[in-house]
Amino acid sequence: MLDVRERARRHLLPHFTRGDAWRSDELLVIDRGEGCYVWDVDGNQYLDGLAGLFCTNLGHGRSDLTAAASKQMDKLAFYPNWGYAHPSSVEAASMIAGVAPEGLDRVFFVNSGSEAVESVLKFARSYHLANGDEQRQKVIARQWAYHGTTLGALSLTGIPYMRDPFLPLLSDSVRHVPNTLGCQLEPGQEAAELPCVTAVEEAIVAEGPETVSMVVAEPVQNGRGALVPPKGYWEELRRICDTYGVLLCADEVINSFGRLGHWFGSERFGAAPDLITFAKGVTSAYVPLGGFVTRPSLVERVWDSPLAMFSHGATFGGHPVATAVAVANMTAMRDEGVLDNVLRLEAHLSDGLHELMASHACVKDVRGTGYFYAVELMRDRTSGVDLTEAEFAQLLPGGVLEQFIREARVLVRPDSRGAAMLTISPPLVADATVIDDLLSRIDQVLDRLGGWLKAST
Ligand code: PLP
Image 1: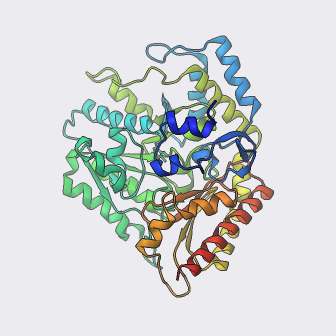
Image 2: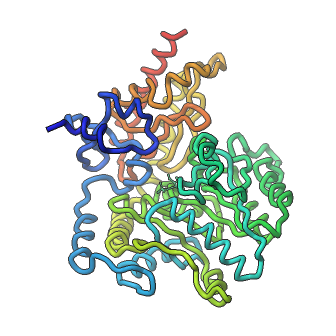
Image 3: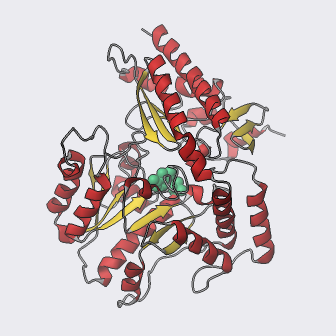
């Protein structure tokens, strides 16, 4: 019998993974998880510093979630949400409506973040059609933002190397504007004057407001490294959208279900979007589920128009088992005070990362909030020297940075999207002891990186 690595190489096609990394003997095979830690098939323990992929919010090995799935499978394993409701999707939708920002209480379920983004694109288009605004189909999105891989979602994604191979297949109705990197308020400055704000309005005006359907942004943008918006940014997006009759969508596939210490990240920034996408943490990733939540007035406009329905759907949207797990996940998050845990300890994580920056000259910046951070890397902060292209290529992707991370037995993300970064997003149940362990392992990674940079001068 071939070993599991060899069979992976032969039969399992990985996502976003270089062929040489997959073919190597170093291929990591994760076998089991408990709390904030996972173990590989060789018995090595790792701290899950990325919550799988920003999603195992309650951590691993939760028997309450598996019990909820099993109970639902015994009762009703499947029925669709096409034409029918079932109690678990109704309960999940009601719970999400109960914690969503004010005025958003209609929930549409799909199976992933990309599908959630496809769904809002089509819902926004449907709403404008219902209003007789046939020309409104363009979308304003932001540079370096990741919104998924299906063709509509990839059209919104602003990461050149992900888009470029597929450009002929993508919609040309999307305009990418600058994100909020480095866009901070100077004393006395108003948010409306910020270039990252004026760029949004200018893009709408340049395209012709009557052709624009939606503005989409993450409250804290993951691509380009945990970009926290300046104060007043989301209020300005709201004002601009209202001025031009454009819908505002917060893509909260990462930001929702506690990542920023709130059910929805929009709460943290005073955002009042018309549409919010979610996925990942809604079930703590025990089973796939995604969706969006919106205003009743928008849904009713579509239903009461000649369209009569939102003409979009998926067999597994609102799957009884996935929605039962979402109910169990949200119940546990509420009863165990998981959001409070994040709010209580976010400063501890932030302070610890800033202390690491102070003691490692290879850290250029630390950004983020809640349990969601990026550590941006450079050659030497004291002399202001950045990584060369050659160093960058050796570090990422699948390069020596990955090796240092493995050695420190911490699964954080070596991120190459626009800069060399470590992306950090631990399970939301991580307590102070786990956070200290995480910081100490990141310290080891930065030590190794500093040593490597010194040796390569
Ligand atoms: N939108 C955002 C903001 C994301 O971060 C992601 C995935 O990370 C997606 C959409 C796509 O989600 P999925 O990978 O579930 O399709």
